[in-house]
Length: 152
Image (cartoon, rainbow, N blue to C red; front, side):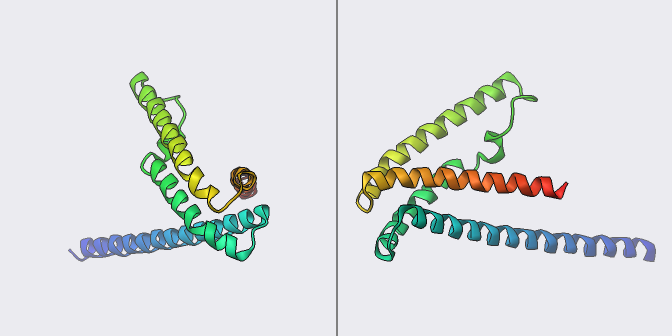
């Protein structure tokens, strides 16, 4: 009986450590995402040569845009990124439809926020904002690949 009690206790302690480790990973991930968000904002301000008053006007509009953009892709997650290697035709078609729907939603979102952005930015600056977002995403992707290669 003691042997079983010891094993149960061992599993409980190990399970608790796993929960704590997952909690730490989640907290570290949130901190990393916050740092990336701050770096992206700094990158955008630098690329658009915005002074503080204009940056402060742009920030709420940009954060609302980002939140809506994130909501479009939330839930789809990795499913949108997966390849078609181990899918049925029905699953592949569903994935294609999801991608198309998200692309339509993203286009509608960009059209909606274009007028909001143009209240703060010139058309040239809005174009530069879009370019800066793409460049930042490429820099993040390159950094991730670099880190993955370094960890191998």
